[in-house]
Length: 414
Image (cartoon, rainbow, N blue to C red; front, side):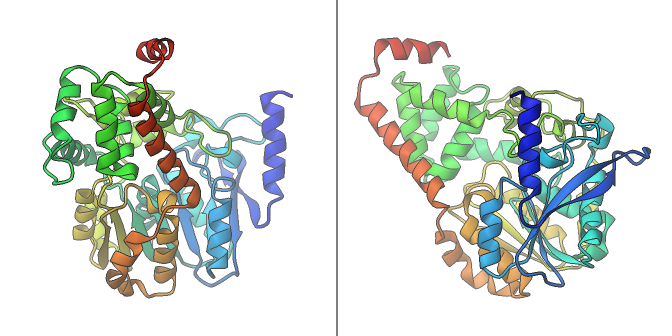
């Protein structure tokens, strides 16, 4: 069976899931041609549903979040999720070909959300965006403000200039050791930087291990590297550089948004631990930056609806300083800090994300401030807890046992 046939069968199967529905959308503003854009709705219908927009660009919605929608519906929520144009079920035109480059822009993605609300006969909704999804959520506020009843901005992205804040946060925390919990590991990090180990994808691995495993696990990894043990680091590097996964993560077509409009692969500044270098290595296609679609710093002061901004204290992808800046711009916003959380409650602290979404959906967002400590203790999903426990155990084993010479040579040459 060819890959095209496999995709067709997978698409047909997903299209039969409860609540999945296509709508016709223009391929581009200047084209009369249309394609099927898919969305899914779960839970008992309400006047103001919860629209969840995941990160990326490249993260699919229909298959990827089946479990989340089931749990959200069980909690009484009415949830809509849209399959991003250029991704998964919304990837192809009527002939089966990939959507052309002119179909993939932020403005069209934003307008797709408004079109889905029209099709669902919804006047306004609570919009929950995570990471890149917060930019799309804010774009809806710019282009279609009447459709927003309230917003949740989970690990927000403000502008392409965030890279300056991200670099500063990573380097202060992990190179200078400005935090008490990272003071002991910073000298080890500096040593590895000077020896040339911390290059390329290392920044993504560092941010991931610190964010989800904590300073202790990161320091354990640094100790292994200083001892010349690279097996676990090699495995984590491969994990951090995931390629396309059909109907789950497909960044190849939509990477033009990441580069052309949001400048994900900003010009490296020549200093260590630069996330821009990671983006340049990870993306399948490099497109020069042209222009950001919105000036959110100028637009957000006009957003009058209530907004909760969620920020993880260990987030090194969109650090707390970005969330604080967003809250300072919004006239009716509260900052919900979860000190032990990394990036994206939606993906890595789902119980907390659903609790936050439910409170905002019910109009009880002001109760969240008093619940911050409780929400911060809510665990990740069981499979994620097991993953990080396994990584911790593997790191301990690698540190305790000799690495076979053959394996060591393979890892060193990887």
